[in-house]
Image (tube, rainbow, N blue to C red):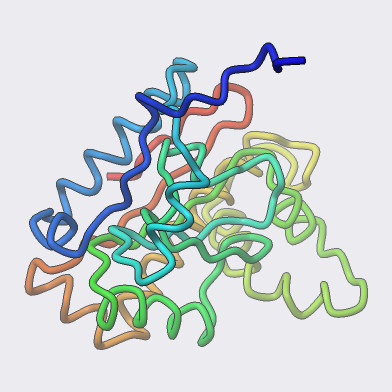
Length: 222
């Protein structure tokens, strides 16, 4: 019996970004493409892709246009959020989307070696790691991990933020989430001379964004 589901892939996107195509893009072109892709995601008008074909075409090499540092949160599907396919993005994940030497090394590979044009530090609303840092949770290796998020908590608290400085205060959590993104952007520039130089030369953009779990929209922090 013939399946009622069509297996005809005609019309689906099956191409993979080439090095030549990627190299023609400016960092601001890449930012604009991610903004447009997120707009499609929010509208529910995402691109239909033939992943089977893309996997085969990407096997021989890759030329992603950006590296995105995201939280591990399962509700933030990075490629989907920006309507990107196989071979389009490098994605690095750690709870609380913070920088360490491994992340910096990965970013240097992605940009200085492989040619990506954008670093995006992507935080998100209602972040469990941020909430845990706000509440000073201590548990196994989580304690050490959360220490990387405490500078953002302390900065916001010390600026006289009104209201409870606890995870129950969503406004405080939001402020810490945004500050954490901004602090880690600054860390990329300060702790990686390679990436800082690329940005100064116009070869790379380093940006931040916040993902809204309720709407799917990414707000870029200009």
